Length: 395
Image (cartoon, rainbow, N blue to C red; front, side):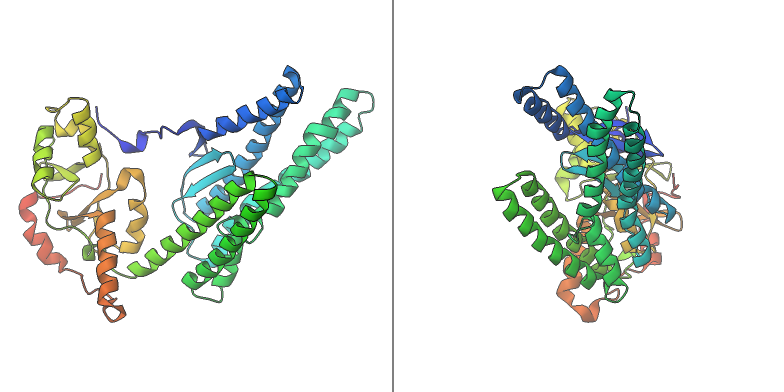
């Protein structure tokens, strides 16, 4: 059966469902939090009912966190930015947007949307607490409003304040970056926001050493996230206006759906190519990756046809497309190698490694060569690769 990477689930997270076209996932470590809460409540002398109420409260809290992330995701969708998934972690939730908006005002709205959801939730809970507290004839309702819902309201208010701290890449840090970007270069704005975020991470870590260990995890998350964001922004800036043709691999081999898997093994051993476009009657029907090959070999499926193991449905990119715009697709697990076409012909492959090498070479050449010093004549490439097989579909 075809090995579609987009359908594979991480062994460390599970899909809970799909809402508004966005997958909601739970990381395995989230179960550790639930177990720790239950054990702590039981150790404190609480009975079964107290343990269940504590677990219910944590689940309600993380439902608020998921709504917070949907605030980001749905606002980003309004600007044409898709969200890969939302994952629950012990320290909160993470919405993986395909990219952040390029416009500073749009990024500001996306960043503010999450805390705004918590403000709405806190307002609704305030009304609920008031209504339940007014029910004097039902004492359990008063106790519930004074405990469960009131605490949930207070925590949502806390989440608003905490998320708005200018500790990039938290929401407040993104708000700061967006405001700075209205007056400064985007890269410089990111560096300033990230530096402030890492300074706050050091503060979180120091306080966490003497109080709450959870702050240590938050400090690590903020520090790593800020550094990763700076690298990503500098990478996009380094790509500049270069076309895909400047970085694509042009010396490559193709396979047919009927070829045995061992043919791919021979090609891997004979050269440096790791992934192979699969051609059928002149059309690209998929890509066979090295990971797919190794997986099949481990299962002793050496004679399996390439067509049964390839990743189908990868949409090719055009050689004249912006490399910066296409690079976002390479970050997706299902698109680590993209076929490159021009005038209906396969002219190259684009991988993360090609982009990295392109950036290193461009950096070595210096700023005076930054425009498109490595760009190749696309028409010549198309002619040179014509023998690889006629037209190419975009399916």
